[in-house]
Image (tube, rainbow, N blue to C red; front, side, top):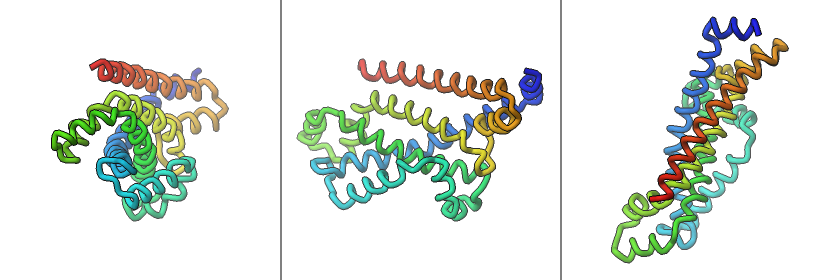
Length: 221
């Protein structure tokens, strides 16, 4: 307990919490946008879709199926050469954010596709019958109609990204996962480890409650 109080006084706990939140917000911001684009493309290019294109759908579907199942700790190592090219380094926060965004993009893309497929095809057909352009149909009908399930999907993705940040220490990143390993597990101090776990659980619970409330309001429109 003394060690935990010492870390609290030094600001280490607050610093690790802020680092985790920064990692997740940036990864969800960028990965959320890229994932939405890829997910919508998967939805509209599939057979019978608004912009059906077998070649584009096959390539996107292959990329999502290829990268999504890779365990995050292995993805960190596999993407190090690409991270050096894109962000100039294979270690530290820039490399971690690159890999987090990459993983979030493909994970969210599948969630977006699955949720948009639940939209009533009759609504889309009605928009097309009224002469709406495909892009307009996507922006004003497809995405708004699937907004409730999409919020739940993004909430799920947020929690998954929080889990991924636990591996930050592998490439010199910080955050609560690295804090728990460095000051808790490696120094045989379970109180510090559990303090980090409880903070993560609180963050996840807050986001889950907010996501559920927003989705419930959207679904009741």
